[in-house]
Image (cartoon, rainbow over all chains, first blue to last red; front, side):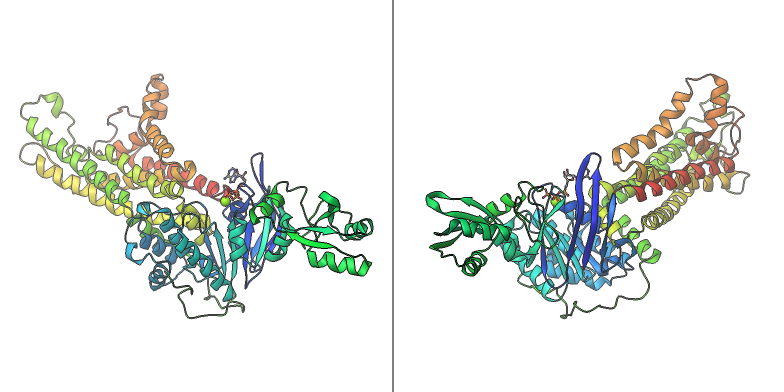
Length: 312
Length: 286
Ligand SMILES: Nc1ncnc2c1ncn2[C@@H]1O[C@H](COP(=O)(O)OP(=O)(O)OP(=O)(O)O)[C@@H](O)[C@H]1O
Ligand SMILES: [Mg+2]
């Protein structure tokens, strides 16, 4: 369990994380989404106590990172930037980390085996490819067999086989009841890996909800409605927080509500529907739409009312 | 690569799992720092350079002295200190061990290892202390072995041609052992500088600047000022430690600090650098 409360981090003038609050619960993969520079990596460094927040607080299993008695046995992290000395072998890198937290030497061999680096364990890490470096980072994260795992863009540099392997690893870790936070700027990646998503833009929270709901609610969830009672339906839908625009040839384009919600609202209002069709945009379009202006799309923590301009 | 499980007997993480009693501490950190220090080639190479500097230069200096002794005049023989001559490599040795000290710390920053290190052990002061202890012990053993080796080898080369020293003579043991201590402390000083400056090149430049350039700048000032300030320069203190003829030395003047007072001043510089380094490590983002 990770809980961030009102986290703010500035680098000089730049506001990297802006009053960010969210929760990452155990037992599921939580995707951490946002465009470049959204503040994902910064947030992860804040969780690990590597950077100091200007305000707010983040806890892991109820404690600030600094107070964890055995940090590596409780939290494992793959960070964005490489954190291995290029002249040190993979084995020695992992061994030195293991020793800090009294983790037995045998565990080093186990995690090397797990990520498939056993045969190159004695080679200097500087000779590793990007993908091998990522695997070494994942091995380091798994070293203490922790209940909480952070992965900052783990599939970066991996081949398709490796990507599939990471996906399955993340899911199996979550299935064991661990807390798994994984960042990405690819919505499509999260759609297949994550159960839940935290979306940020410009350091602020945009959405925190199940991944399916997010997909439906973003512009990929635009629904075209044709009805003889357009005026009446418009009023009903607007009251529920939908944004409605006039489409071509007398249709309404509704965003902010799913097709089934619209159908049920129409039924209870006694309005006939001649067409009710969800318009599938691509996931990436949805994501770009959602994050293109983080202020306009700012939401409450429960993820309701994601559409700006809607009456509340 | 098809393994998916965490490679462990399956566990249920949804319940609170017991963590071992106690917490991470110095024992593990010392072992980790030792592993880090011995597992990079730069350590080995810098040690080789230190050996060449201290023992090699001492051997060359004494051999040349022995070869030219009989042709040399009284000016050369006057004030000859066989101990000091065999420790002639102390000067370059300080540069070499400074590189070792800088790299032991700055490599963590340049490679990003510092983030892994601090994620594993968030108590940054404790990490710095353990790193300092491990490096300090390695530097101490190395330095003492080297200065005694340089002394013994140098005296063997001088013997038969020129006056030579033995450890039993007054001031000799102090000079040889003290030279090793100076090397050690200068290595730690460099490590402290690197904790402050965080960049290899910047820390090295600062170290060499304080060691070599600062005394040169001071020599451009009036003599009275030089007299007052030069005795606090690390290089001057080191030279004075390595001689048995107190009050003389390369920079001359009767205003030098006694060897142990000078050494205490070096320890003060080093402590200051390490304390400032610790404060900044805690204050800055990793
Ligand atoms: N150490 C730093 N010093 C100065 N500015 C920083 C630092 N780290 C991050 N920033 C700034 O903070 C903002 C957030 O950066 P961050 O790396 O957290 O974004 P991100 O979501 O991880 O992006 P990406 O998807 O590209 O990895 C950016 O504007 C970045 O320039
Ligand atoms: Mg990032």
